[in-house]
Image 1: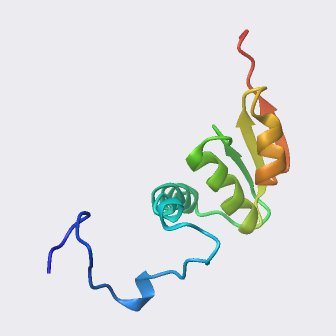
Image 2: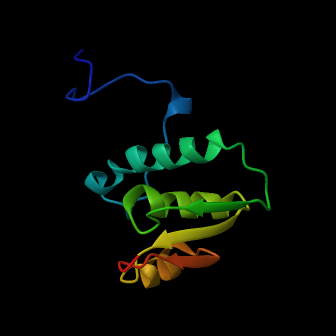
Length: 106
């Protein structure tokens, strides 16, 4: 059986699998491990404790918006850094506690 990222089939142990909701297309779900694991590993490196504050830079980007959502799920007070054009996106989609705007004039 072929192995690697171009394999059509691979054998894995069940704990390494996650159920894909029917409403999520396979090509969309394919990117989740990259951003999700990157955000998760970055958060876990800080050994967070519920109630602590976390500052997420580029909170409107792929890894950033995932980090904001994961941090909130961990019970962290979450602040996302985003430019003026993306602040509403961070507020509406990510559920952060407070935005921090980046000014292009500084």
